[in-house]
Length: 90
Image (cartoon, rainbow, N blue to C red; front, side):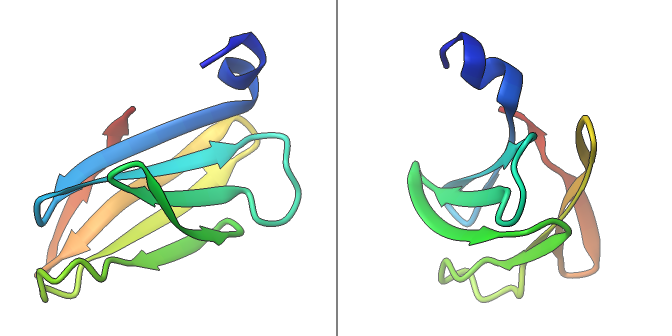
């Protein structure tokens, strides 16, 4: 990441179902400020708060729940089979 990108973007990630999922937040953006990537490819954009349904073939009904604040992520959690796993900084 370059200097300005480090200031205006932050990201979290998790490995699930054989894929690496990354959620990128554009901090100073209005509207669709979240982007979900699977293995580096863009999958979906959304506005915070957001829930991303993971359709990776694992069939376990996994979703990533994301909330933000003025300064970054407020929450970023993978929900699967009644368990909650926090995403880690990318």
